[in-house]
Image (cartoon, rainbow, N blue to C red; front, side):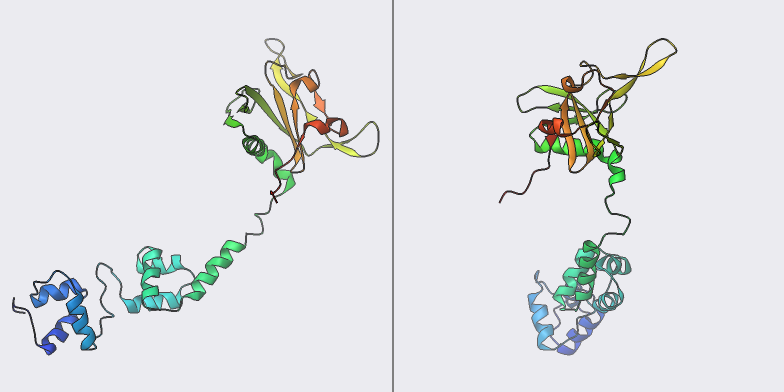
Length: 254
């Protein structure tokens, strides 16, 4: 094409047919304009097809239509076209494509969990430290998890500024109480320690090792017990006498 701006509608239509962007149309027609509005208006007046325009995209509108119709999700559309899902969805919205089936499937997948992703009480031993840390944070404490072989699991900064060592204990064991037939959770409160160069034994925690025990039998069965309350004990079976140490998750404020 000549360097001067093409004014002939037939030539302009030919340029539009082979170009893939409005910028390319401007270059091939020799236009000195920086904006594309004039070219867009001219194409609209001539009723020219510009669905093949992709700009920086590597896919056409027809390819987008096919991908949206065949895909099961926006991620699949993105894989088919080799582009971000957000780019494909924006273009689909601009073209007024029907993509409700993709959004419905996405919403359904968000609502449904796999069958094996249901909380199970027998897994509480894996979540004990995190449950205790979450409760302490909700109670206004700062929390630091302690890795390694320390005799405590958490260092908690209380709202009064004091720092406390917290040992988390979980259990699924139940034991009949001395005063009745109602089973109570039974927590072991021992730590392994060397009593000689070669002999190791299970001993009660000392007050230097632990300030509090966070006992977890279930979501509704948790106690935050000071070491002094169980000092010297190797186990604990909390019942009504431990009600003052029982903790609960916060309820919604009405």
